[in-house]
Length: 166
Image (cartoon, rainbow, N blue to C red):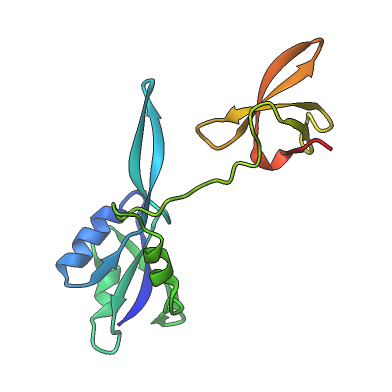
């Protein structure tokens, strides 16, 4: 059995997985916990690690792989020319090895800053400004306290636009 990649229709990963499994195809949909905010409530939900994609295992010499493309929820089978493109050996196994006891892949963002660390803005409209690291927000952006116009202002920026002050 070799692993292949299936592209699903938008937000149809679970639907495609269900219908592929009904055809006796081995499916792997790696997921992680994503923070969702709605109506002032924050919730953690399992979310596909690769939106619109999932893995299937099959022997294309024996399986009816063309039927995969017409499965409910499936948009396409990722191919290289006329034949499905195989996933390199070890890729799926490496992802599975990282799963926790709930079957979720933990994503940990390395936090290089502590609250109060001096930082500088290195790109964007505020480039050159200095301030202090406050925290990360829900979208993994940094919140800084910058000294502007004689007072401290809270500013939210992408992580890439901030560096430790020298």
